[in-house]
Image (cartoon, rainbow, N blue to C red; front, side, top):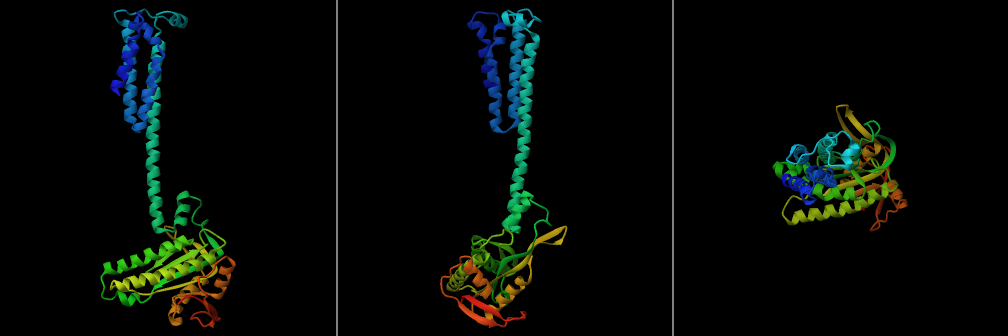
Amino acid sequence: MVVDVTVLMITIWSFHLQYRAPPALYLKAPTLMYVFILIALRTLRFEPGYVLLAGGCAALGWLGLFLYAAWGPAGDAFTHSYVEYVTSYRILRGAEIDKILSILVVTMILAFSLVRSRQLLARSVVGESAASDLSRFFAPEVAEQIRRGDGDAESMRCEGCHTAVLITDLRGFTALSHGRSAEELIGLLGEYQSRLVPIIQREGGSIDKYLGDGILASFGAIVPNISYAADLCRAIDELAATAESWRREREERGLPAPPVGIAGAVGDIIFGPVGHATRLEYTVIGEVVNLVAKLEKRTKSEGVRALTTGETYALALDQGYRPARAPEIRTRREVDGVTDPVDLVVLAK
């Protein structure tokens, strides 16, 4: 930076030698404008210090040229007339001071702008990092609403929404956990969740929470859509196939391979924050959540891997769901905790 400014100032200084005129000649050279280009170039480094150094060097350089022309060996007299300044080799002191002040003011503005930009960038990075962290603890859709600040906690509520709820569960996990290390159990859960969670999200589901060895998810609660039942059934089909494939892989490796029970249904839910004002949790609640939990347990007594209700299946067909194979319908089943018999549809045996 010092070399750049020095070369520019020497070039300007040499004008009076080139044209064999008094030094005051170079004070009127428009080449001074290149100083602002040199200062502006330093902003590309995004460091205010570089801008201040470049501007300071330029101001000192022009001050040196001014002093040389005014009091040097071939110095010229000052004038207070702008016309005489323009039409002769006289020096207008105020004009040269204005140039120096302009260099300094532009330098300060650019440096201040860089300081502000760095602060905004730092806040942006922190904000993106916080959003990324939020996505690890909330459903991505909830995290995005919190990050954007679209509304307060109470506004992010949905009462009486007709949506779909899904629950998966590792069967026999409690008995399996006896006598095994924490690392082994965490590894098992990690494998299980890493296989199933992406499928749920890919089909439009939002992870509500992890229920120990279970997963609770919703379709159409956070982000409403018109195919929530079809999305649910498509997710169950893929989840059942993936869970069975994963179980067989673990068996071949000689590792514990518990089966996975899956159930889903549609119904009215309430989605929103629950808890104290200082610690909130977004979740879905309602009768359908309880029904799905009971259906998941019912998969064991029915001897199947995935169940849904007749109502859910019919709605899914209306929404464009096409099963890979003809499902088995089991009518008027007594489900523990449910008053009326329920028509069940087996999506995976």
